[in-house]
Length: 474
Image (cartoon, rainbow, N blue to C red):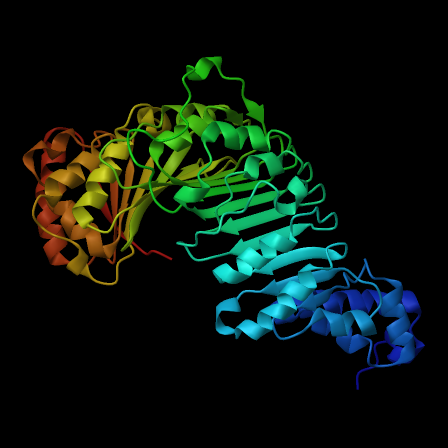
């Protein structure tokens, strides 16, 4: 064995002082939590069974080691409360639908200890269990820091105004998926420490207007991540909400800590919502629309303009996938700034193209696209059968028409031929007038070269030369 000197002599772990052991325990428990996930209690639980000294060190530092008692549908909390010291309780189980109804008693029994519960994370909640939980959770849970409830769409159970006693002062993270809670804004007024809010698959019975949502969040000055996602578009034209005031007269609510914002729903809702807020530190925005024929993103554009570190978008990446298509805008690569992704839920190829073209030509879109220099077009489908040849040429040109400042066009192998055909049409000399380079993935195909040749020749004839390159996409 190599001699590493007196400073590197091995020592028996039993000779280490308590503070050194605590440092090792902290590292072990943290990594064990990542490995075991929901079974994170296994980390410190194992340490306490080694010897009395280790057990004393563990129980002397409950906060440092984040000691928690975890209750699931297979582990009743009553047994743990009788054996372990007084520690915070976590109630979690994401697969409640696979357990027999008798096991639900463990969950119900754990929730009754509301003075010690710090986290609730329950998924696939049956309606009968949600109803029982609502009966129990009519009073404040003052220790509750994280609440996650996932239910299948179609449940008729609506969380009432009295849920959690209408007050959750220590709540830092709230996630509801498929769980209707129209009275949520009232509860949010008490969540001054809220950092993460995720409302996913909001059903019709849980609809909350943009005005009510912003009002409810007005006191959440520590909010960092916000996700609002609706299960389906609201009926038109009599959708609830919608401001009768002109946007310029609205008093906006500031979210000084907000860095991530995601939305899935209808155009009108997001326009009304962002007209009422400021998020000056935002650096990631993801907006997903239901498919439609017309878009208006005027308020969204102005909202982005109010971001403190907002930079001109220099690069756009368009991706087509089986169920949706999206475009992501990036700032100049040498700077830090906000990225914006706009997605459209749609499965038919020509609808994906036409919707994306409409989005890029919508009012105020030119302001977002005015500095684009690079455009990537990628295909995320598993086969070319998704694409149809009829009418596609015109639709590709409609998509490319507004992008008048693009100098570099990057095309994936699957779509290069289709776009090349569109560019070869007679009017294509009017598309992307400052285009200088086309990068094609695996540029070897004589077919693609033959199709794109007329476009290159036409550009050369009019004094706008374009060079084709091979693109090695990583």
